[in-house]
Amino acid sequence: MVKMSSEHQVMDSSLSSLGRLSQQDGGLCGAGLEKKLQVGLEKHLNGCVPLSHQVAGHKFGVDKVGILQHPDGTVLKQLQPPPRGPREMHFYKKVYTADSGDPSLLNLQHYLPKYYGTWSSPDAPTDLYLKLEDVTRKFSKPCIMDVKIGQRSYDPFASQEKREQQIKKYPLMEEIGFLVLGMRVYQVNSDTYDTYDQHYGRGLVKETIREGVAKFFDNGESLRKDAVVASMQKVQKILQWFEGQSQLHFYASSLLFVYEGFPRHGAPQPPGDVPPGGTTMMMTMATAGGDAGDLKERVLECNNNMCQVGLRENGHLAAALGQSLSNMYALHSRGCPLEHHVEDPQWKCPARAALEQSNGNGAKTQQDTADGTRGSVDVEVRMIDFAHVFPSNTRDEGYIYGLKNLLSVLQQIVDQ
Image (tube, rainbow, N blue to C red; front, side, top):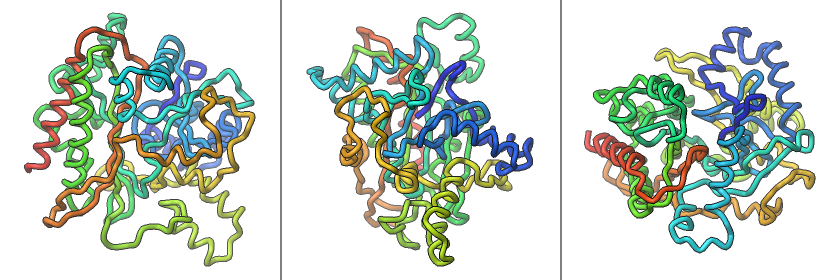
């Protein structure tokens, strides 16, 4: 869920960056910024749109493409310049090789987004993108957190300058073992999102890390301990995989946490034919007699990160960008253009059913709710970002250390 390049450097602009742009350009819907965004869309996307709720990494902004959503429901991550991009592509190919007989790699598939080969636009055939599963696709109000794992965020081949740069960003990485890169949390009482960027995560120290992570599970009305427990179960499975393998070391890789922020009780879930998160707009259009074309144009504009973004009193950006990635499919799917280059021949447009299959780490989990009743909580925890994965003959103790420390913090949140 990212993209990279120098000319095509991985597009990096957080919601906080978008906030600064809104101030500079007189609002996100200002004519100047809107024109810049539209130029970027026309240049790069060919039916794809910027990911509306990416929380970390290289994001959509002026002169930046960012992670894209394909009309078929997948996400596109632009290949980084060598050696990072080819290394990440090789990693996905290695794990998802159809005839792989390595049980460890086959098991690892359960903890990654599904990989569907590479994609490029007919207008820019040399710009390759990794075509990946949209982990948030099934959620109505996805709460998302990106956590970098490990004691080092630089790989063994990094220059001294790079090492010093990474250490300076978060000196406590070695001690804490993980870093919150960003998160967005659905607030039930206001129907908005609280968004926290990388600067928030870097401000967390040993004494405040529990409280800092707990914010991800606080929906403004209650602390979602059910989601904490379900997340811990997923992380423990990933830890078990790491404790049993000694062929790969991971650096600057992250865990992506997603849970459903839409309350189980109260307002009904959006109808199946209506894109989650887009219910209000679509129903308003229907009652007002708006036509489908107008509806599509207005909703697509919102999904293109051109909605108004306001500042909440607590200083965090709260964006009405609550649409799950799956909105894109319903809003502008025209099928899969045959001219799109897809490296993996198994990926066919009609095979949307493949996207619906669980890969083993995202099933609904029965948990005790805060009031003691049994409920179903939908949680995903997936490993992402593999530009710095290297072969090894020892266990990845740095990653294991980070996972254990993260589990300890999550347990403290449950116990508080």
